[in-house]
Image 1 (cartoon, helix red, strand yellow):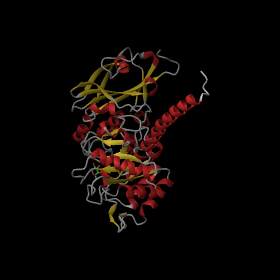
Image 2: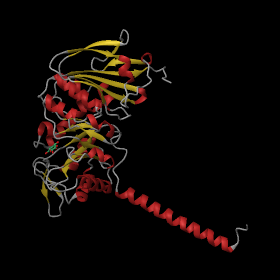
Image 3: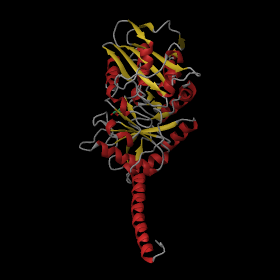
Length: 415
Ligand code: GAL
């Protein structure tokens, strides 16, 4: 057939025109979705690490405090350990001006937020702030409702890097729609900001917030007590599958160093949060930490488990009442294992090492890993373990943990 025949050329043009129409439609939908409904990707690829004012200072926040915390974070070893965000929680705001702009408490923050951001950035750290999806914050300061785009522009101007967005005074608001609106406002303002949802798990954000924020609270507030901390830990058990790079379950900020638990209990609290791939937001006074607190918060081997690039949250392998075994898969076919004694008596347990190494959360499957290809290490004692045979007796004091990591030997392959 001669395809220069005018009839055929006409038909081809028509087909091409029809195809073009669909292509154009597809391209515009793609751009529309991309510009109107997106969170900043690439942020929080590992759980965010930082400090937040609420647990220790409540409403007693000021420029002087925040600058002191920034100094301490930079000089204490916390920044070197990976902590970077300094987040001012509730109470920095006092009203709105005649143009609707949010007004900062001038008595407590005399130089305003941009000045503070510059100071924090000059220390190589990042700056976070707090607001609320409702008409007021939980401490009855002005909320974001109705001012989302204006506030997002102010945060971008101040060079904010992290926003925690609370859920008080929201009456009949829909959570997903409210948080999507703020996500869009942040995106429109153009500055990449980690978006931390704080609606306490009420509308199951793990089911819808993956594309909305970078982390979402799963429960109400933590309290600096063993049983309260453990209750929050228990609530994370079914949520492991929802966590991953860029989208984390948030069991609330750390209480390590605030005085309501023993050092052993704080070690457990920190270990469990590391196993959960939880955000590590310190909540104590960094300006005067004792060495035990600093040692817990900067245990680099535990932090490496938390920050592992695979981004897996630990699963519970055994629940024998007061004794539990938790396993976190790590990149490079490695694993971390946490033996937890929740009870009030010391427990002596016998662990089967190959069972721990092969543990898999998918039904009864087990990973084809061989013990001779791995080195087992105690992440609190900081020593390698050379077990005699396949089993090992371990003594676990009350309210404490043993955490091990299986490091893959360089030369070995499992295949
Ligand atoms: C709560 C929130 C706390 C803290 C507090 C401030 O709703 O869960 O983490 O931000 O508000 O008022």
